[in-house]
Length: 439
Figure 1: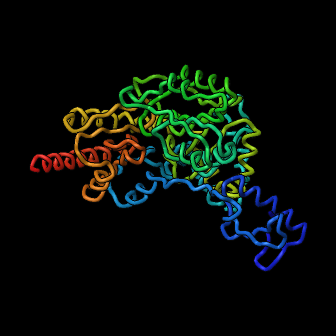
Figure 2: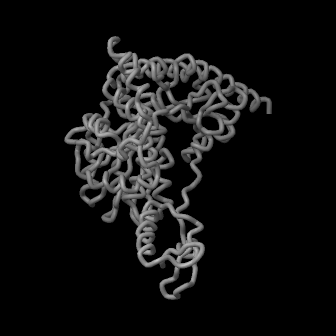
Figure 3: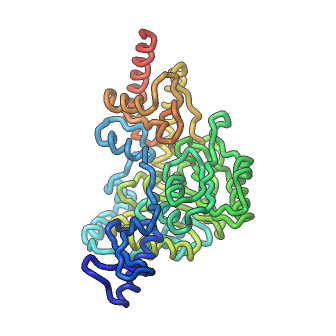
């Protein structure tokens, strides 16, 4: 089929040009529902694109993000937050020596807000490459958050019918996009009766000779589980045995916890078929910059870049500059974040002990997140709505992750807000338990 305009046939050269353009759009899962096509076998016959494609990629509703959007600007005590309490621009500037602060402010104020290099400035890509081994700027693609990085990878690397193994429960994007593409997705489940640990025997059972991609997330959202260096090495080897790529969502890198096992190095350090996805949102407390990245083989980066031309085109210039500043001073930011997490973790452990008749958890081994199991007969979505609407507290419903009877908690919030959020949560649960008893 060849594209036509609304008013008639296009010239032969234009047909070929638009045909190539249409292929590119289709290759990333985007197309216009209003486009008209000429049928090759019946010249002059107009056929809608819906007729041409029997099945269009349709991604399932993003349950968690829809719920978060409903409440996150309404509540006072967000203890479902998946990142660290955000920094301000002033906080970033104050990381510099005092005599460098005003020049940095002037440089930002004088920065012209035009387009930046589409894949991220070379300076930023080199800065990001420095946090990996054997990596150059050509192995980095800067994206609009990790969410765009993941979306580009799925839509660039996968086709309908490909076999994918994805961790579950998980941030819904990590399996739902592949399912929407038409892939055969096997969910590698982390189970409560196994302490939400990665079971490598289960991975071996799911692995097939035609597996195209394995998707892991460590530290894990929403359970706080962790792959050790040895476990990640073994997963990398298993992927290599069948010629699969291994994509690791490393949104919680740099967020190790005291008295817990060592966090695995980024999978990009191994090169080859390992793909790392990073972000400024979770470990740096800078979600408003909307900066993420892919660290991978240069050919994969080039392909994702070509797809990205049709989506967001380039990062924001101001975000690019502030990200460089944050990465260069990451040790100070990580120390600040560790202090927040240590304080909140101590408060949380005391709170769980005091309310053991109502709630329990498997504390995170790294990162910021865990699932809270509650001992009440109420669906998690209803409980979360009640907490948000009547107690001004956010705890994300476990149903958004396919785990009913749980809510997700984050330990990265400002400590005074975190403490009050837990206090109000206990009050809500006690009220509900009292009502159950009265009933």
